[in-house]
Length: 297
Image (cartoon, rainbow, N blue to C red):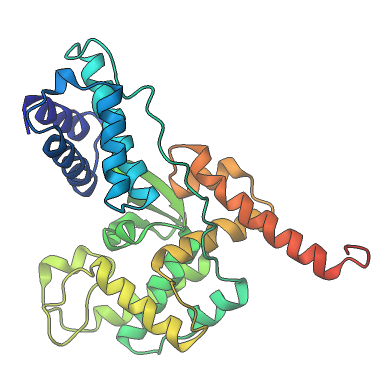
């Protein structure tokens, strides 16, 4: 790649505060585009070339979602170069991405959530797992935000926690009383245990496996924890920590929360991202109506 790409990625990191994972995705997308361009300079890129690249991606069997993401990366890249004066025009402006089917998120119903939250045991690991599940459902935070929580970021008096979301943006998330009690129960029993790794005790959730050093839990560990309890309770497929985030948002809307408030709680930059949950809520209302109303059919 060249100076244009380096300049663009530096901008995304310094000005947009994009995460390392997002920066890596952009770099990969641009690297593959440059490989396609071969000896053609970026200044010579035009709409026909971009359409040919789009056709190549389709021929390779990439999914519509992957193709759309690649196109979005190129749009951002060319828009940046045009704005910086490195290109006289933006050839990606007229490029159309494939239309994506809107997939409704998987949502647990309230009884399934209740069974899930009651599943952990009362030992150290069980108390931790209960606190993790309660916190995910109570706050709607992402699993990456959960594992990054430190103890001092939870305010037990005001019932909020401070999390760092996408783009290193900080936000306050309300935490329900049941989740706060579960966190206290876990910390109380944890304090009575000998710490293997003093440096990690700032972390809210630690690994208590006998095979490690008792450090901060990872995303993968939380996914394994949730999978185990899903298998014990509802046995549904494709359930992830994000399912509790989906359930959090949908249950709030089902009980009358307004969309803007849910957007703030989830840390979504655009309201359109949050609106998919209104489709889930509407679908459930329609199902309830069809089932209960005597003249629905």
